[in-house]
Image 1: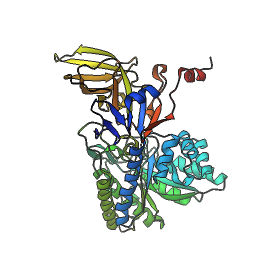
Image 2: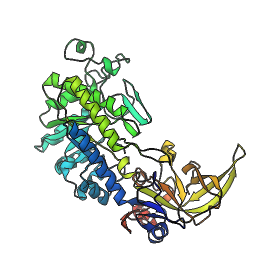
Image 3: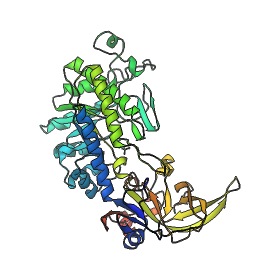
Image 4: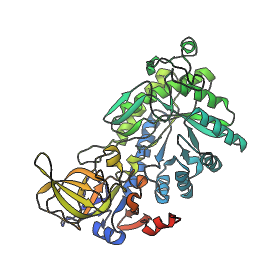
Length: 479
Ligand SMILES: *Cc1c(COP(=O)(O)O)cnc(C)c1O
């Protein structure tokens, strides 16, 4: 029987209670690869990648616009995963030289790779330029000059997008909109922000996005250009740059289309203003990533078909309102492609009942990994779901907390979950939906070697990333 969300589509449980992924039982996985191990359901990942491409492709075709789907490699990148998403028609976003190297080594064409980052090194920029990446997303005025200089010195023209902040923040079930942003990414569309021209000047802080100067004259004399407009103008001016378009990323784990729609309207308005100022109507608009998934039973992931239709209808209306033809769009899902496709398989060690304040007992179930393989609960208070997967149990469920083996009381994998009361050492326990930001954020805290990533497909498993060993750790130590 298939378990359903938040597990990947290939996860099922047989009559004896043993769980399998794509036909491979967890006892076999544990015997072959050890625990802890990240287990990735290849078919599920490919289906999600293809599903996003199809959903957005057809919804945007309906409004007469093209769309590219970039897989946000920071969620999890390996040679195989880069190849899979490439085969499913996605492009790949990278944010560092390391991610870029993996995408290139996997055979993703440079033209299908984007380079992000708020503090790219010259090496990273040069590598990207020499690989012929399709786009460098620039994040500051100084970076515009640096990319232009590095491209110019090589006789190249760098394709760039300018990352803007629209004031829209989304995540979970809500979005909020603020004029001014206190974060490191992007360039604000709000006038009255310090930019290169006005740096150091104190300006009115109460300018809402919809009060921004609308056109060329009048209001523009009252307020300096927004940092976003200043950056776009500079990118247009530099002959070593080809300004492809405008980029906006509004958040993570978004479950509602409103934030994307409001941000898209702001970006399309900015695009029209730039065209009015310079005669340059940029070709592309990127709406970023952040498509939400189910982490717990009963949670409902964002449906790509529905969100694609909603966002397409909304951007078509916004473009008509501002009176410009539609650009080509792109989106950057990471978590939504790889998150649900992955689970982590652990072995239970110590089981300890602890009396808590309200008189209840909480059963602390320690597993052989922890915050080094999944930092998200400690970092964000992220919630996960766990089950005993190696056997059936008819024991009464108990209130349990799944914890790791690290020297830190915050080393929690699952804050609260019902597990069978007879949970015991040696049980196999799986945590669902760990494919994104699990291995990619893993550390060697306590000198714990990082677990392998094992792909499963059609009844067979293979190692994508091998388990680290203590020898690997010692090899770095120069004594
Ligand atoms: C993190 C990030 C993404 C991917 O976010 P998900 O929540 O994994 O979809 C996409 N674009 C940018 C610029 C990001 O920083």
